[in-house]
Image (cartoon, rainbow over all chains, first blue to last red; front, side, top):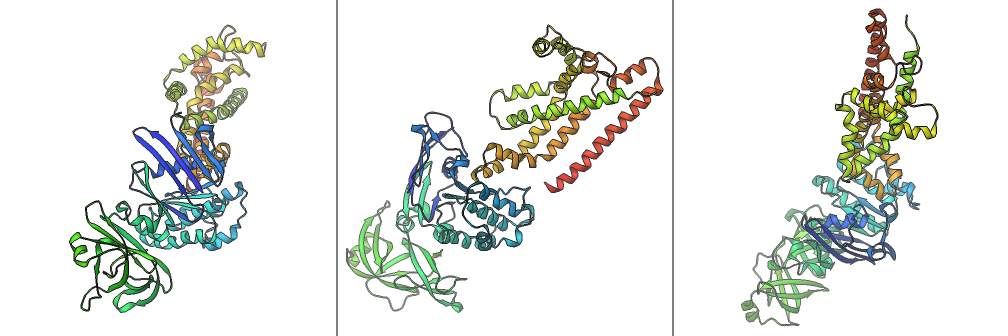
Length: 355
Length: 222
């Protein structure tokens, strides 16, 4: 486990970030700008030094104490073994790509093989180039290889795609996904793009006004976190596999325990994806309607009823093994006689956010 | 007739002064470019003083400080028995102070231009402060060093007021080019004054020309 606890006062801003994160996979740090994400990362990487006694720090990375203000421990950034991929690539302009990627490798007793990563990130033909000769996406790819080759115990990615155009972003995402499939390095990924979150996150930390307000598996968190989805009310995520591509209708069929149809393009058969659906887009009925424009109608089993902050009824149900949420009025609930264990049908449109 | 000794004394003085200035100026400029200490502005102002102060004022106080009873002269008496005033060593001390801003300021500016972000990146890749300075900051400050060396050297060659006050005009020891030109003009030996002057003019131009062309080449690489 990675344990982090920082209580710091910066001018007018109080940072009180306390969280644990799993030591594998991608942990997304999500929050509006100004919520303190960068401050946390700077403290974790040791790039920000604060001298006051009031500030409390505790950071334990795989049983190694990195920061412990109570015992006067504060490792210098170069002893932390935490690599950082910055939004602005920060490649060294006087070094070639090859020299850049070996900078950390030479200094960190890395056991990784540079050739492997050069191949995986397809940068072989760039090795002799200087950073100014590379495109934005290439720079960020090189910067990732450079960070990874230092064989860090933790990799911080601070909005690495934010400065790139849409195409470069789409190009880079698979590389990031592959890092954690192939190398066992835990990552903190900062983003405020929900699509990136859906696609990458295994675990998620939500930050607001200097505090970690929620944390957990992304599928569990979505239900009660409007901050995450930027939408009022609850949302939920279905993990699914692409089973059919219906090109003429621009639809894909997904298997999420039941077969559903979603509007999507550029999908590949058999890939695993996540679909984000807003609870207010889901309606419930007792039997499948015969003449509805809504394409999806799946059998569900009611699991729990909650009352949300606006007084609406939140119905939590199971679709196969996954959770589905619907927001309905009390009146509808009475009319349909909804209760725990009841078998019903959930209807939702094919428009949902994918990945 | 042209004497060779003033040329040699001048070149020797400028070379030694520039070398010492690099030794002192580099850490000083590094500190200035990194510190958030309140004393920064104070030190910056002191370093920049020779830019605005008449050389005679600086020379006058140096004369006092270098004399056997003065602050520096007194300290010097523990190391050596020969007095500092009207000596080549005294001249070097004066020149170092006088040319200080011409070395420190370009270095500071170029260190600041390298900036924190690249240094932070180096730190997260396992490079400590010295390693980062040597392998990131220094190579990226090549232009700053080139400018600092040229200006420090050229400014020392062109020094007059301070040398006049503390040098003593001793042939082969402290008699530099700018002084000997003055001497010749004073006794109306314009031909000799011309020889030295035109030499100095051409030399200064060549130094600056070479520097600026090199600088442009460096600019492409950096």
